[in-house]
Length: 107
Image (cartoon, rainbow, N blue to C red):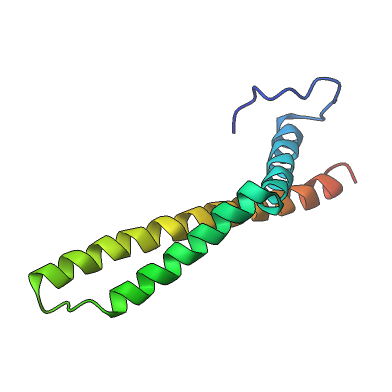
C-alpha cells in the first residue's frame, strides 16, 4: 500500500495505524463504489459472465480438440469474472479487518 495518500490533518501513532486507516478507507470506498450505478453494473456483468461461462463450459464437448479450445476460452472468461468479484471482496474484507484493528489499536 502506498503512503502517498493525503492524510494531512490526521495524526497517526505509527505507520501501522496509518496502514490500517488506508485499508479501512479503501474498503469503505469499494463498498461505496459497488453501491453506485457503475459498481452495480460491473458486479452484475461479472456475475452474468461467470454464469454464462459455466453454462457454456457444460455444453462443450471436451472429447474434441475444438470443444477443448472452447472450454478453455470459457474457463478463462469465468476466471476473469471470479477475479473481479474476489478482488472486491478481498478489499472489503481487509477494510473491515482494518477498521476493527483501528478500534482496538489505541484502546
